[in-house]
Image (cartoon, helix red, strand yellow):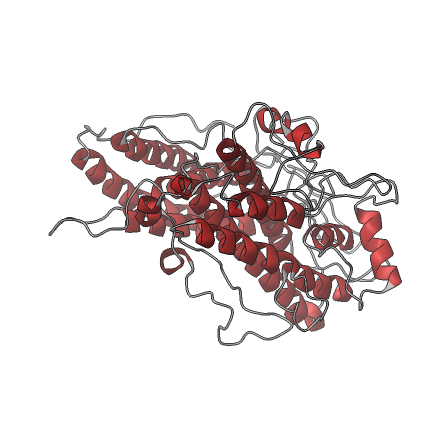
Length: 490
């Protein structure tokens, strides 16, 4: 976790806290220690402390989302037998559904920040890192029994359900290095703390909750895309996503939203039927079907852990993508990831209230652009897992390609915040389209395997750039007529 956030975490393990935390769950899980309640840190007011906790929650939801996406994108490949392909596709759809729900959590946390007057937080730390609220080091890694066990633990209820076998529990606890002396934390602990704080009128008076922010918040109608858990074709083994995105007008709404998010992760009921839609139960279902180490088939592409696009590499992370075509696609993936975050941030700047007669509301364009980038990132990830990591080829005795594949790097940009002026926000979007165009121009090389897709994507970029130029002009700024010239050297 970023040091400027992590340095305050010690306060969460302090003692002798005031109401409303007299009897609540402690965040320091020492088996024999007396119960310890969090207290207000010296650098904070109660309102500022609530914003701080929501910032942590936003980073956790963001990082969970990209971990689940990477795991889902790793599923498939030539090693999956024909009779297993339908099952493996179901795993991928289930995990992608969970990632969509995490996106809803991420948006709802931003709504609460907007409601109480806190700055949005779309940031997260680059991989890998450790955080006291989590039972394992975050990492982008292919789907394995070990990574599934980590996800199960992170989403688990306080008490293991009765149908979990001793062997399953042992394997899950081993994945997170759990011992009687070391009890890792679950995500639900943070949500319980936030619910307690936002519920207390002495800590946060009603005046903190700003109803006038309602039209600037994300809504399910805009972002839910119809995912309400009852879509045609869903079934208990592979339920349809139920995306929670709630607009909030006061304290009750905020507490209700946090409670729903917490329940969607862990579903505290012990009845497995009641838990069927929880993230915990869905990951456990895949875990029970996932092949063990002695299986004769592999359900994933041969992708690395924590791949990095070319540049100044983090020596503590994973390998750098070096193959000529893969390296360009991986850099483009990072640019498009930043574009998505910029659109998402901008959507909270524009009201959903109707514009004056004859005027168009750019909010719909920004939200549509965000969804376009979600689909583009999935397509580019599909390209990367099929392309080589390095510029050398490894084959087995039958001559089949066994080279390690590339993967989507999801490297966080240097900044995710936007300028204060509306015109400058449109200029940021144009800058990123120009950066993307320079990379796509190189990828249209006919010698590259996926040049046709690069040509289509470049054409779509040019149309969107024209739309943004119009909005930049209407905001009172003079656009540049041509994209900036740039090198595409890697």
